Image (cartoon, rainbow, N blue to C red; front, side, top):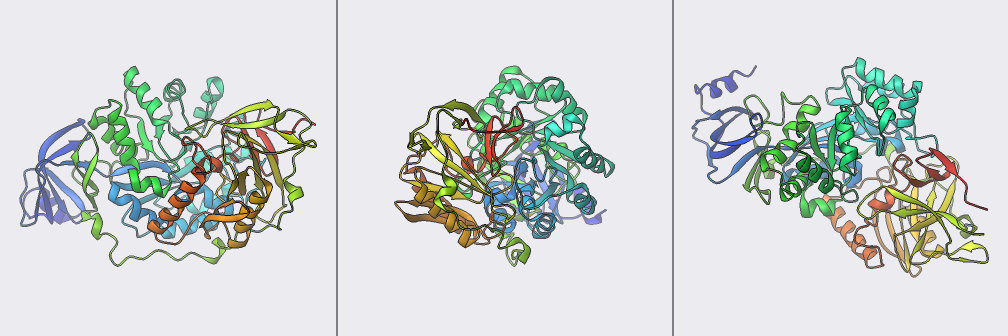
Length: 568
């Protein structure tokens, strides 16, 4: 126990800093109270009436706990942890609960080891959920597997909170030993497990919850969210770059009058360009308040609720004695306008002085390994109607249709309505290539390709002609991964991501500018506003979100949980 902290709290010693005359959010009573906040040794000593030689007048300001992103993948930002911290901290996010299953799908346990090292001394609280489903299913080819034995050495780490999103829900419901062994190991270590069960309902949902799963972030409608809350799962309300679930879920909560104590906010996957414009969790709070949620409620969901769900309430999530002095100062509640952020009592603008990013080990580099493709590998017979993946605007779920597609000489020919979607195995394991029509992507005169393709991160590409698809894919093969955009037979833009084909070690502003430029160019080629050219595309290979997906092994019907053959 810190004696100085107690002396400051009791008024026997002057604080390092006092935030005077503030409106302080009390998360326990969910109301703002007029008070001073005394800080000592990076923690909150007391809330009440305090004075000190070092004071900051907070008249007209609201002091809130630092925001907690309850579920995200650092890799989806495309920035290293050090650079992501620089991007999100000024927006009030002081804590991340990160699942590194993206990098683990590519590099295995080495990815977890690096992430823990890379987040060790950041001015950000980074907690880790160990990947539970690598690979997510046996119907795709990943770069590595992460078994219960691989997981075991990490379970005792103080910043490992449990198992990341358990995506293999058919295996859980069926009681398969491999996933039950992981759940049992986590439970024995006193750890929790995150969920991932889009559209699961009824007895299957009850079985999934009975396995000890704690949270769910895949709800898109409120009826689904209500059933999962009633089954005992905490609701993580996602608002990212591709999945915009917050309006429907918050509106449902408000109309139903259900308590929000087991609801928190997350981003899951959010581009740096969106973070630079909106912030991360701050944007969830702003949207919720705009829909009619009381600010006190929304701010508690962004902090205290999340901290409690992950067993962090003794350290985080409250402006209260003994907690870390992770604070957000707002001057406008409706807009959630941030005046200042403190991390462990230090202003955000001073937090990175003298700090450098952790080095990237060699085993996380040069991970794109496959032979150059010939045009014949992309050919798709079209003797009649074909199974098509249809995009759902603003969501990462897809539609499954079987319909006539444009063809010439019995072969599928993409156009502005039906893009050609390709998944190419890139880990050097089997050289698989799979192709199908994609409806709703809309690109004209070119192609997009990326090594960011959840969760196995094979190359995924979409375009309206083979020449540009091959050009974009070949660029990624030669450069070690990232984003590529081709048109008219030439490369139009790229974002290099040499770390596992997922991350850039460059400054986040540089990555953000590169991403913004390629996104704008891709949108100018016909991709509609409700579709993120890269993040939406990256989810189309994920075989655990309904209803139809494409992996390197072919078309996958998520509802039947089986591979499909195109009609012949």
